[in-house]
Image (cartoon, rainbow, N blue to C red):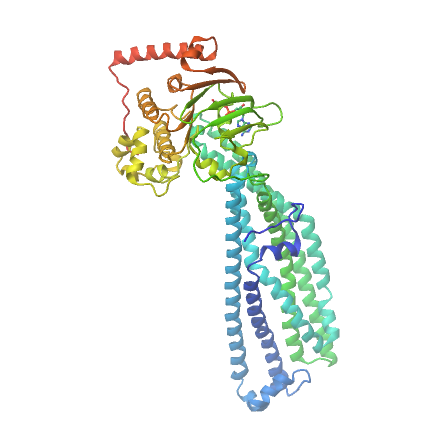
Length: 628
Ligand SMILES: Nc1ncnc2c1ncn2[C@@H]1O[C@H](COP(=O)(O)OP(=O)(O)OP(=O)(O)O)[C@@H](O)[C@H]1O
């Protein structure tokens, strides 16, 4: 069940409507909890009445007209005299009721905890699901740490409120609804005197919390900023060390840390004032009730037993009134947390606006066509402009160009991480915008520029897209990517755990594991974005030979800066400033003036020099196979 925490305009719901929506699906659980609480409360308020009847009817022989039921019970068990000689009877009755009340209280707490945990699990599932499907444009603008904080800390704030306060609100309402008529039936004047300050306390709590609500937002946002800094720092800890930037990073951390501390202290300070005033008002209320009841007792208009019961009942009503402040405070925090959560849940899905979603029943043959494609990451200038090219099934297209010229962007457009602003991209003649995204992406095996590996075993990483892959297929893919032997030399072979982001592997090994993963999928189209940049020349040439063996069976798009990776391609595109400036084959491009020929001249000269030096040292550039 998907929760909608906002109205039609996307604005987060507020007040009771927000809570009511949030607890949908768990309302019956809360109802049981409230019923259990009702029973516990009923026991709770009978206890002072037993005390009152024992004092007035049994000990002082002053029967009251307003306790007929208890007096009948006393008569039934032998009359006031007999009960007076056996005072353990009311004592045990009070104890038994207190114990039963405790049991029902336990049940209501359990039910409330189950409901709140269930609601928050659903919220986290929904958040996780939403983030998976959020558009790339929005993900690009989001800080990971802040996102994590919204999915964890903000959900926890919500859970605390739901576990502690929903039932507490029910408890308060039940207490007031049941205790108030009893108090009124005992003495109207005394009840009015005992309740005089309660509307003031409620109004004060409401207005105060409304006024300081922005502070909850401040604290939450400060925590989000702090989490982002910590997350970014830990992710980039090696860069920090390599550049000796500890001091700078520590200073950078200090600012959001101090901001979080200051905003928390400010909030605590303001809330302390609130609690103090609310407590003083509550105690004043008890004082007023005490003075009024003592006065009435001296005049003889109420009995001591009535005062005993009255003060006990008043205490019961004052407790939820004092809790109103706490409930409103926690609700204020929860409303802010839910607003932040809702900001994620209202981000558009990447599928939003899709008109047609075709899912052909077979894979594509691999024909790619870009027709006058223009796309801009931001409004200033297009990232790629007027790109037109065709790749036939089984062909290899190479893309070369200076850093930032738009090569990766072309791949991202092909994968529909973004939609082009004008022009079209077709796969086997079908516009990618009309294809179901899951189908579209299943046509590709991708090695991204920064290959991401999970902190799992090498086997798990390679079979990421094909969970039921056989060991023989995994090994065949690893063989093609020239990493099989290396893996076998690791102490646990394919079961070797590789740490977060594959940290225990070298850069070249990481790239080859990622390549194995793409190859294992056996897709119609292979996309390699600078996928061999960290691999040594000898291994690179073996991989290219292996890929060449698949020529004609699989369309390959390869981006690289090293021309040796590109030279074999059927078609080569040179991209400069987002535009195609050259197009041809290795032969035609080395024969014409332009970037390709200039780079070819530089790289062949460099490689010749390197080869000479290597020969001189007798070093054949073999890779050391370190255990992961
Ligand atoms: N998510 C993004 N948001 C905004 N701008 C972006 C984003 N990704 C890339 N760019 C910009 O788009 C331009 C092209 O980037 P792209 O990654 O396609 O270049 P590239 O040719 O692959 O570069 P390299 O060879 O360095 O990988 C760059 O100027 C870059 O700053």
